[in-house]
Image (tube, rainbow over all chains, first blue to last red; front, side):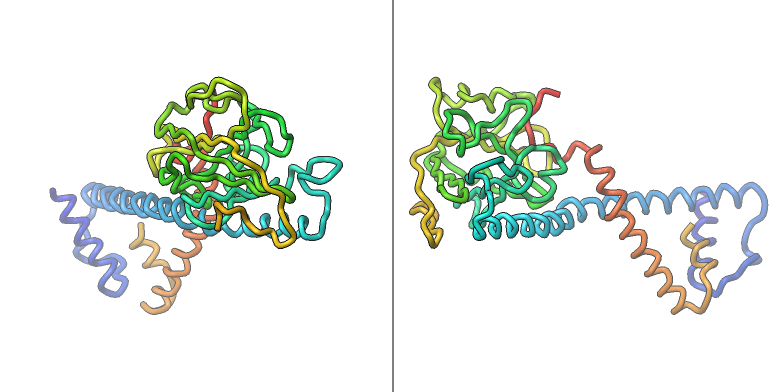
Length: 257
Length: 53
């Protein structure tokens, strides 16, 4: 108790008045050391609290600012490349996987397009884009025309939070993937609101958990759930309904209008 | 700790306040630019993929 009182006195001496080095009220000897230790400990606790608060601000606000900036820049580059008819994902020659391969439009999650890039590493996803899986189960790109599963991941919170509103997607909602030449229109047919983060079967070419038994053109969106945590994964499955050629004005398909 | 810093800053109360503010901003900058990006992957808040690790 004595130590606490001492601390208060000391702090007042330090904060309010002019610097009183060697103030006469200050106690000498071991009591003073204890008081000082308690004071420093308390200030460290306050500091730790402030740092944690700042971390929340960083996670939920600053990472979005940074990621949206990065995503916009990369999206502009892809759009530019398409406009100038450079070799894009659909073009001949080597698949340019470094830049994005296309854009995802999910009206149920809000307007705005999500750039899709290769890979689901934090480095990729932190740029505010969706990534298609290369590991543990490789995604089948819709542009390949092969049957398979186009599996994607994106952040739920922070870093652009592109899949934040994934829980608003309901059965029947359209998911549209836009490439340079084609609109791929998918329709949501199954939602798995909670699954283990080890459940890699959801990425299978034929995701049996969604109720499908035969090969087809599927799309899978994964992110973490509940919001602000990473305890489980949220999965949304869609199936290709049709494709539409992109016209000169890039008129979006009916689902996006 | 903070009292010690305050006592060791030069100038009158206004100068000290200004310097404290600048110090605080430097600390926030270092945290946002270096410390948090480093710490984030180590904390289990934002893993979004399914994997078997």
